[in-house]
Image (cartoon, rainbow over all chains, first blue to last red; front, top):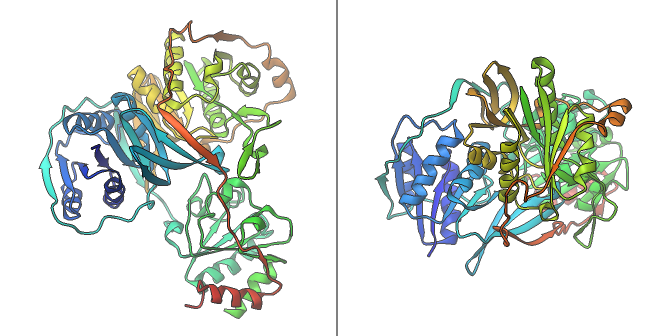
Length: 306
Length: 251
């Protein structure tokens, strides 16, 4: 049976990987690096944890991290590695795969075991399609998008063991770490999204969208041009291929035309409503409820009605 | 300062149509990936400030000879192309092997730039794989790059923070699309692009052999099956009632 090794720098994501790994194999080993708290939490979820406690490991250096993980793969005799596909670990994925001579898939959004194949789904052609792919190489590195799986719940049988590796010298010097400034909204966590597109003609109409979001207990989000070109909202609120992929219960889209770049970020919503002046807007093809109307009027009426 | 920018030829994604969930590539022109153009722009800006040259590197089928002109028009000084039919839509690990071999053949490379992911497949592996093959340091997801002599200061933008890091050259850096706005070449630049130097090599010249079997197999590639109701509503009242019935508001 395949031995699956999991690693994420984020504990919640590592717990999600634990759920994913258990679908692949009964032999799952979790690695933590200089994070005894994560080691404890994973063990409490029933994982066999190997904590590497060597403070000179520089996780900001993907060459070092990949080398450390490759050594863990050899020592623990793993053949499949699951990483989280957040930026930190996605940066490790290709380098690790190169060291251990593995095939690699990143940004995986669904995973299904079919015999001895692990079938992975990921967006392709800029999100226009979803490809189902499988790694045929004996060794595999799979980076899974956060929130694809539920975090593993508390469980028994876990343990924390220690693991020693050779730490290569680091070539990356961290000069400064800056927190993200200003907007710290998490639109991926919102159950209701009020999404504004380029069909909104004036920034003066934005407060109506914000009022609606507040009334519904949701958040305001937008298409990329509204943030990057018009700068009406922060990039934290961008939905789409180069933004966030959201799965709200309800997405209310105002003035969205429906380019693939955008729709890939919202197509998993349970209910999609689109309000647009163009009755042939392509977004209508992927909406549950379609209103062809002036979005200003609809926003005003909704705020009155709710 | 010699800067290599790796660029991938992709179908123009805006022009791909979907029929019966299948992507249709008929008459879809080939172009360079959008984020790759930001990597090129970053390279050209560094060259303009520091001197040196920008080499546009690509591997693919014979069409890349034409497609690479976009990069030569947008500021690359010369092109290095690896052409083979096997390289059309080649898997990431194979492309990385070819690009690393090509870079070894280019003299005095100080900086190697990639987009953070290709426009079509967006796997983000090729840059890190090339860095490993060449034994070079890497920094991905750069939102700014500042070259100072033999070192480069890079801001890496992560989801919850950004890191300012410093590495010695040569190094591999992958850039985010918001690092800059890629320039649009003028007509004169487009006309001159065809005259810029181009070195074309084959896999044999690089002594690279590709395996018979790709390490990744694609089982299917289909547009998602969108089962939406597509109900046209005439008034806000009607919409509110429908959403209440769905149980998504007024709970």
